[in-house]
Image (tube, rainbow, N blue to C red; front, side, top):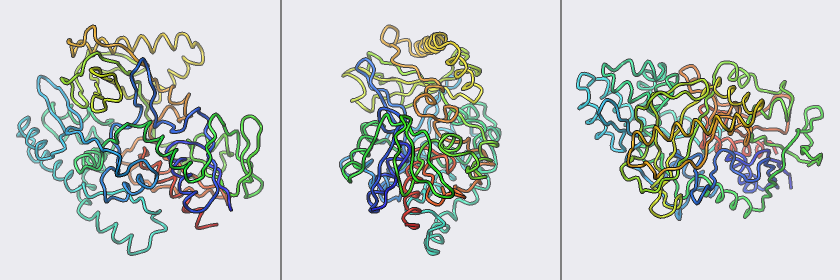
Length: 489
C-alpha cells in the first residue's frame, strides 16, 4: 500500500487525509500545533468559548457539490444542524439602520427607502445577487480533469452571471461605492469588505448567504474540526500533533519523506504540503520549487489579517444583531486608524456561553504594515507587546460600552488576538487568515494545480492555491491533491 505523508493538520490537511484513506492509501498527518484545525479553531476562556473562524461557511446547502464534500469529510451531515441567520450584517449610519437580509427583496426595499435617487444601481446590485445565487464552487474534481460535458455544463450554469461579472469584477469596492450618490450607502457597502477587493466578491458573498449556501454548522469551528479528525481516524488515518516538520527530503526529482524537528525521519511514497505555502517554499523545500504564478502572487497581491477582541457578557444581548457595525471614537491599532467598528453576537450558539450570558467579538482588519508592527513589538519587547494589545482591547471595550450603555458593568475581556497571533500559532504568512486580497486583477488568476515542476511525488494541497482562499478552497485543494496523486499512482 502506497503511503502519503501530509504536512499540516488544518482543513486542507484533514481533507487530504480523509480522501487518501478513501482512495486506498496509507496516510499520516503531521501537525506542529497541539491540536488540528489550523486557523479553523476555537478555545475556552473563563467558562466561555471563543470561535476563531466560522462566521458563515460556503457549502451548507444540500445538493451542492461543496455540501457533498463537507459531508464526505464529516464536517456536515444529516445530524448536524445548520444555523440560518436572517441578516448578513447590519450597519448603523447617521441614525439610519441598514441590513443585508437573507430576503434580497427586503434588502432592495430598505435600500430604496434610504436613497431612491440610487434606484438604478440598487436594482442592478440586487438583480446581480439574485442571479449569482446559481454560482457553485466546483468541488468534484479539478477542472483540468473534468470530462468535456462537465466543463460545458459548468460554463452554461454561469452564463447568466457574465454581464454582472463584467460590470463588478473589474472594479474595486471603493469604485463600486462611488456608483452610489448616497453617502450612507457608500459607508454601508464598505462596512463589510476591504475597499481594494473586487466588487464582485460582495455580490458572490451575499448571494451565497441569500441562497442558503453560506450558513453556520451547529457547534462552530472547533466541533467541525473534531468531526473531521474523528472521520479521518475512523478510516485508519494517523494524526501526529506537536510534530513540526523541518524539511522534505529531496534527492533529484524524488522526495523520500520528511524530517521532523526532533530529527526523526518519516518515509513516504507521496507528500502533500497542506500548510502555508510560505512555509512549504523556503523552509520545507527550496524556494526554487515555488510555482512561478504563486511567486508572482506574493509579489503582486497583499494580504490582510485582523486584530480581534472577544468579550464575555453577563447578558443575552438580544439588542445586538448578528453583526452590528457602528461609528466609534477614532482608535489607532498598530498603524491603522478606525472610526467604525463591529460587534459580532454569538448568542445563536448557546454552547458558547453559560446560560443568560453571551460572547461578543470585535474585528478590525489589519494590513501588512500592521503585522510588521506587531511582529517587531513581540520580538523586541514581549512585555510591551502584551501591554499594547491589552491596552487596545480596553479601548475597544470602552467603545462597545459607549455604543451599548446597558453593557456597562456586564462585560469583560476574554482574549485578544493580533495578526502576530495567527503567525505564531499557525505559521500564517503575515498573519493572513485567507490568502491574497481578491482585487480585480487577482480575480482573473487561475487556480494552481499543486503540481511542482522538478518533483514527481510532491503535490501541494493548500488554500493558497486559489484566490480568495478560505475554508472551502482549503478543503477542495486537499481533495484535489489526492486525486492528482491517485491519477499518477
